[in-house]
Length: 349
Image (tube, rainbow, N blue to C red; front, side):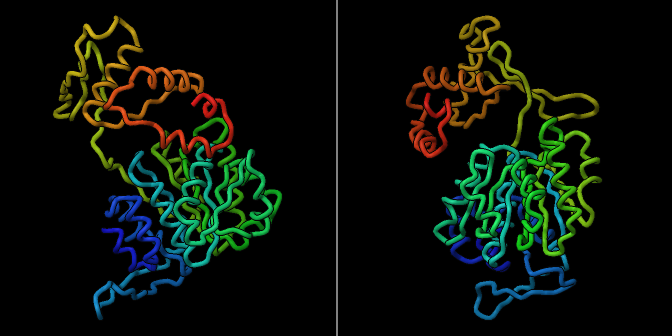
């Protein structure tokens, strides 16, 4: 399905132009499934079995778009990283906002909440889709959320839970709550908080409110499916949009498993660098040589470290050691950092 085909679901052309410019012109399989069979773009209510007719673009042709009473059914989406969950949630949010409905978008931490807030502001403020943010560090727009004077509210879990308890009428005119990063249910801090949020939402029994949960795969997934509120449809996808290779680099050779056949693993090898390029058991050398290889292949790379201090340390070291024509200037990223709140990482950049 193409982005342009979403006009049949009531998405304005100005929004489609933004999506085509900032995303692929084609929906990923998960997104198409959610549009066709899970009603993420429906926002007309629970009219069972209604058939809507939308123009297809041809002169006199019209296409049937079924609602089938799924507009306000809760939805839990569980899929791998990079499968398109975030844009799926964004499509659901903007479809409601363009029909003059309010939505709340939840994230566990202030950093991803701030990133999502800037994203919505940059893409949709020109259309008049006003976006506000509320985290522990951002309270300046809380009064607007309390008064319902917004279209999109991006909030951290902790702040939203506080608002639910403090202001019982918070969700009176809210059409959709999107809970992103629901795999946080396994986190010792965010898990209990997320449970409280879901329980509060479930008890309110607001007929007009739809909940969409977005989660990566987690352990004890069956328990999550059983615990999420009743009248919830589940969209599970095991398809990765790109081929992933899991393996180990040793002596400059990347060994990875490609498939399993008849209880045996089929392995392949790829030479990253010569063994003499690194010192024995030196993580820094291995990391640098591996990154050089991937950079020369024109591949983007994500590196994860367990703490902020380690992330900062290695970011500074790699930036200083990988200066080459193959590495593009980080000027755009540095420019974005200047718009963020003051932090140690911002100052060091």
